[in-house]
Image (cartoon, rainbow, N blue to C red):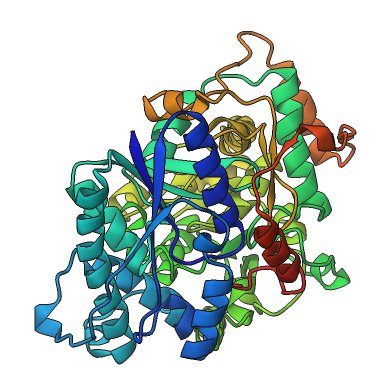
Length: 519
């Protein structure tokens, strides 16, 4: 088959991903080509993060896919930006909207943003990318395309162009826990349909002893602060504090940054805002204000490009003060895991901290669709109707929730699903730094064909009868005496070469930049 790969933004691991994908696809007998950006006068996502146009383009070209591959490459033909609000195609604008709210740290897109010059630039790029992608598909006679991310501006438009052309279209991204690739068919990187469908299936199947230990190992790293392969994983990076021991609270509220997901239909929140949803739940629980603790999200204190989330931190601080709730600032280094351990109920919107909470036997209540919505680790109350029909007001009267143990087991199974079942070749594509992967020999060259034919779960083993394996590791995690297995180092002779000399030079240079930098 003729298969295309699209990266556009050459950020760290994603260039590595595309190179490995190309190698595996070639080994499986496919012809591979690329669509790329040669530069534009318009402000793209990288430029809007704060770098000057010339610097951003130079750094991008240093890291470009055409520096590390000899495959055929075509380029987007960019048109000058001349956009009026009335001319905007809402479908083409979806990616530009998502990029705009992410960059500006807005929780929702408002109509007046259509008039913003930065949005117009992103939209113009997206429109050019769609047209160029349709031409590229026809010219290369493509059968299928892999698009990095698929959510943002140009990438979203290219993804849409491939779907509109009737191609099998896949988004690829890094996985939750680092190893393997997240590849979703006909969904961008934030798509929840496939993850939810598999969550429903695998939450009913017990883990084997080996699988239980593998999932517990990842959770141990989260709890012990040694997890370094997750992107923006905050609960394990902060420090314990004597201050926390003096805080008395029953309910911990963990709001999330919604800037990236707010425009996505799969993540659509039915409450007017997070605060509205949280307040309705707290009222239903019949708690006194001093029993509620709100923890500002750590990302609000970080600058992404030239913009921080101080306005969001202030919104939640003001809400907490008005209601009489306790509040911990987003910049405070108090351990979120420690706060969870001292809580009875944890209230979230989309925070993955729900996993740690469920593992520790805490009741998790979620107010918005998320990755774990169908995993059976939380009570999901997405609107007034669901809230009014729930019995959560009895939780504190009864002293415990009847399904808390089930939630813990389901959380363990969900971690294994996200780490080993859903990712493509999680046993052979190993993340070895913030910048790179090692491709380990032993994979079948036909694995990608099996995957594209529809069998996307390659690890289908499960335990038919013995539930003690799961219970044992949960007990060990809660009592902080889980013993991680000794992981042997990767045999260098088993590593498959997938980088050129110049790619290794770029990789070396990247090691001097902070994790998350766009170079």
